[in-house]
Amino acid sequence: MRVLFTTLGSPSHGRAQLPLARAFAAAGHEVLVATTPIVASVFEQDDVRVTVCMSDFTPQSFITPELLEEAMRPGQDGEPQDAMARLMPEITSGPMARKLWEEILPVAREFAPDLILRDGMDLSSCLIAEHLGIPQLPTPSGTNNLIDPAMVLPGLNGLRKEFGLSAQEDPLSLVPHGRVDYVPAAFSFAQHLPPSWSYRQTVTVDRSSVLPEWIAQLPTDRPLVFAALGTALPMIREMGAEANGPSLFPMPDPVDTLRSMIEAVSRLDDCTVIVATSGIPADTDGLPPHVHVTDRVPQPLLLEAVDVFLTHGGFNSIREALRTATPMAVLPQFGDQPVNARRVEELGLGREITDITAEGITKAVREVLTDPGVRARAREARLAMLALPEIDSAVADLQKII
Image (cartoon, rainbow, N blue to C red; front, side, top):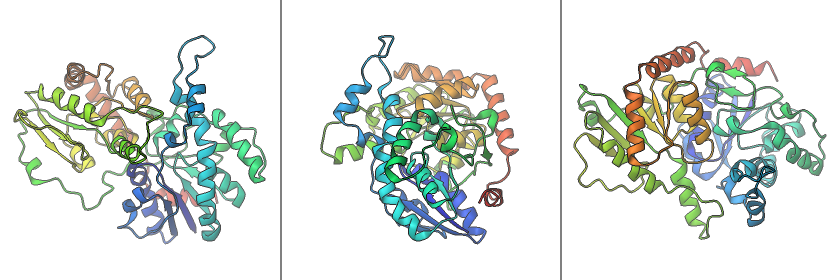
């Protein structure tokens, strides 16, 4: 069997797909990953083929001033609307899908896959699969959790007409064979897509990961708090800076957010705190001795020993916290993260941080630390995760739909 993976966005999207790609390769199937320069390195140590056929871009790069002006107009009730929420369906099912069609279709024709496992932002592969007469499924991503099939259907039907494909009436034609998730149905973060193929979240994607010795020497007679901003926001900000133009859609400044996080955890003098900066410059002068700042740390491993995770709320990070029963205080930045933060609180797994001052962040972390109900709910989520089949079983399951 020949399996084509499409991966774009940040490296976290590649890390979400890597366990699936490994499973198919280990079972003797031919795997090709079509991706971008930023994501390609995620797969370089594994027995899969990689082709860099897509350019690095974000959905925001397709926003024109005209689209933004239209999206920011008040709604029928006269109230301001969430411009990005209005723009994302139009962009991902329109200009972005057209660009990806042009970049991925030649690769797919040459590779002749039996199955496409696509990035959640890649809606072009829905049409490519229809063109080739093969099944496609989205893999775990924040986009899957946000996307409303009814809102992207008109854009996809417009492209279907342009590409000579038959129009679809059912919005769930977006996922005719379901989707792949690493979260049980009871803890799903998907707003519009029904539960489907669920498998156990892999604890460690990077098989060579080990915790640095200095972490193993930290005191254990107090709670351990881990704070991390993630990799997507710094990457998007860097890509925007390289474009040498003004941002049509303002993004949070990761330097400011990191500063607030460090100031907040500096107040937790009865805890031990590790802060991962993702390479963002941070002023560490005068930090109290209980705060330890590092560029990066093997997050899935560290979460196994953490009492509270102060996180940006990316879907990879949330799944890793569920797998390790780690309570969360979520400080969302953009994209699916605000919705994920609300869902974390709704599920009783932690707190959504709405007061983004240092005082507000500290308060939320302390609330999570002292709430036994959150800890119990986190353990419940881990048990539900452990009840899912291992990811290797996805190979046999997905073979059945071909």
